[in-house]
Length: 234
Image (cartoon, rainbow, N blue to C red; front, side, top):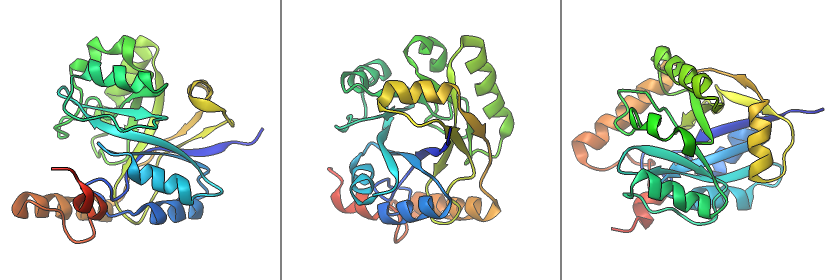
């Protein structure tokens, strides 16, 4: 049985902090032998929808990294954008109404201001899967805490890249059997072979520059968040 190299939790420049266009994302996935990618832009699904339109030999799962009042959650298999700023339970309700899956990204990463943190404990019965490797997180022990949490509560685990930048695309991925629809995807994910990995120093240097530039100027550098900046609703 063939395996589908699958990357979960990646951003296009429809996210304010990414410089990776949908076309560049599709090209990078092809170069690295990725067969399926779940695109989860910040509070937006248009980048994922664009990638799905242009990709012929790549399976694209339309997702969104939704900013809730308690932290970020990933919604996968979406057809409509979920509005940010809602409670986490209302956000989950809206993802479920579309037949979507609810994943917890970087739940215990402390330097990320948008992790669910302690709220993860009361959401156990509402989560489909939890991220146990985040390629943007250099503090591996925080990811191990997420893995211990997932095993304790019997949650499905996945490795996520959280990729935002051009360059290395898939340091972390899972090998899945082929699937049909969200329910079968989750079943395949439970049995997946997970390959963890992290971005290198160059990636982190570029990410730090982007973050500092935004903090100082109040806007992303040229080429970052280009689509988001042009189309965002005030």
